[in-house]
Image 1 (cartoon, rainbow over the protein chains, first blue to last red):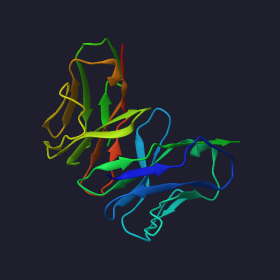
Image 2: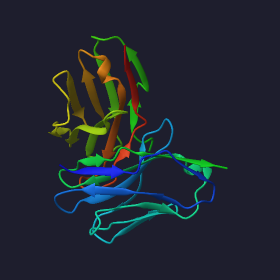
Image 3: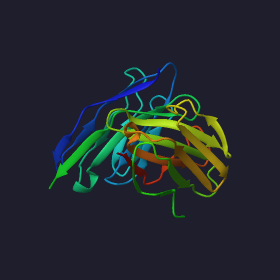
Length: 111
Length: 114
């Protein structure tokens, strides 16, 4: 079945450092791909998405490019802030409105 | 709009008791999803509705779990009888349409079954 694999955390960075969180997926067809963010005590929020190969999703300085050849959707940000500390989930949707989530990656940003 | 509203935010109960979790969706958002989040299994889709009709309940773990959506403004997830392994955070989410439309999540209900 469909699955998503994310790099294990926690990822700890200093403020203004470059961020990469790796995400790869397994699917039978061509899914849509998503990054969600969860702040402490809150529900998930959509951060960005891409619906076809080579699409780039971007929001709030975060970017991810849908790479079909490597089945990847890595999340990047050029300069992280303390307020970016959260749990980041990569997800795919292939059939029937069903999101399949990765395990989540904790990001901690120190000032 | 207040977003997705869930109640209660925290629930502590004893094994064997009935638990009812509630969700008030965003007006005009026709899809409603119930998710469960645990450390062991991560985020799992339990069931989703379209226009108040259950479409896919294949993620419901067993017959102790049931979900209803009697109208467009209200949904419940019921566990009867509850067991300690049901302890988790339960999220309700909405989307306006299906497919890749953004799913908006509620704040969740943290359930602890003793």
